[in-house]
Length: 169
Image (tube, rainbow, N blue to C red; front, side):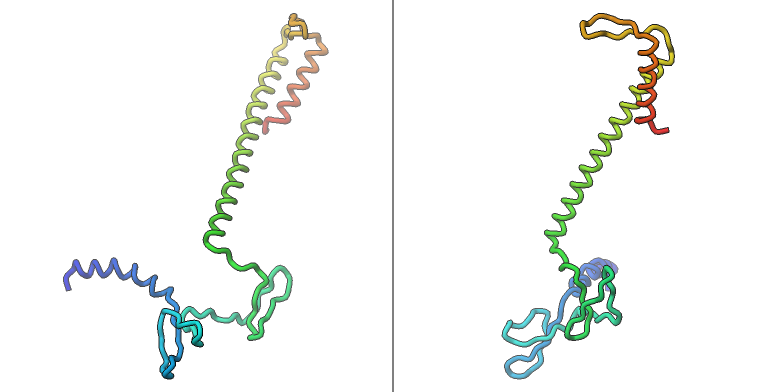
């Protein structure tokens, strides 16, 4: 054999094996009484037996959510869990969960941004009140008004509350 054909065989073999591993084999008797084997199921009116991909019976039944296992008429334990979802249902469920996770992440990011901006503003205000000097505010008529000592103390306390609330220490 040439090296090239061995290389091709080495590439094709892994591609062929999975398809044969998932095939289910059926055994049945035809109308003449001969036993037949095939990977294609026989017609529905013929009694058959699947001999590939058999699932072994569990020797010990698992306990699910503290409830005793359900045992079928052959003595095999079955669970009360819902049937597995189809590929389409599972994909839709994953997409829905991903969308919910994305929305939760966006909400966290928005909250983090708000906290950072509020922290910066509170620190800026606290620094302004701590520096002292004469601070001015504007009243409802648009006129400038100098803050009194009580207003300065109240503003400083409010800025400190903002720092305590929004800034992580």
